Image (tube, rainbow, N blue to C red; front, side, top):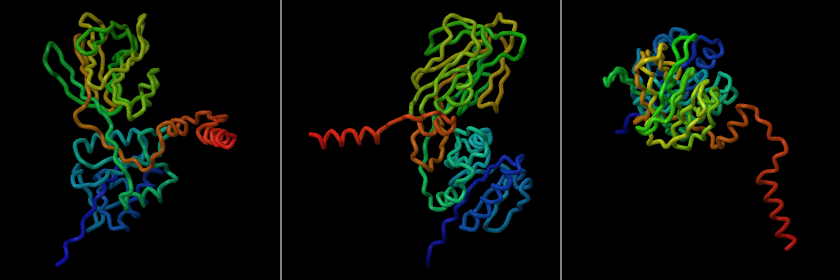
Length: 314
């Protein structure tokens, strides 16, 4: 008696508000099911795609992401962040197919669809764990909110007219007081997102570190900071300030911050798992995503030729 064949399920999350994303998503469903994989869709997205549950090929669910070996995301970084939130705590890694602009979280591009499907079917990919943030908000010593972030947790002023007065702290010691528009606490993954726009450093994903970057701070010392992954960052909204603040995590989850609120940011206990299809170094991704000028680089091939010439002359 032979064992039953393994049922392989893939969760598909798409930005169904875009025509191109709907077209690509339908193509993925058709291709994956033709290879014997079961595609699981969220009910609202299945309706947007005009797809229904079908025996052995398509499952339509409300929010059940269990038992999926992979999550395929069709869209930009915002859709990938939504999928990371949806699948948080599951074992299913996230594979982003970029239909956005820069799209640092995405691994595959629009013109790589056939090879991407082949890699999924053959399980020809690796998984990379990305550092996350655990974030808490306290008021008068009482915990009022707990959340998390993959890219960044940003403390921002709630009103355009009023500056936010904060004191920042690293590892239990006060560092500086800033009158500012806000403070970004980011991961290396998020260093090319809001942190980048705020003037923070680009940090390679393999580096384990936490980042803190002030936004438009009126202070003598207001520089981007890179600290150990074991450090705890804190931002306190001064109690006597007139302006309230708001905490944004990945631009998706918000918490109102009254004067006197304390926000603590530390390394998250649960990483986000991203699929890697290619072994291209992060440097090449930076060059490609930003279109950086590298003409004139002689590089390793030129150095090898020079060494070979020297050996021949010896």
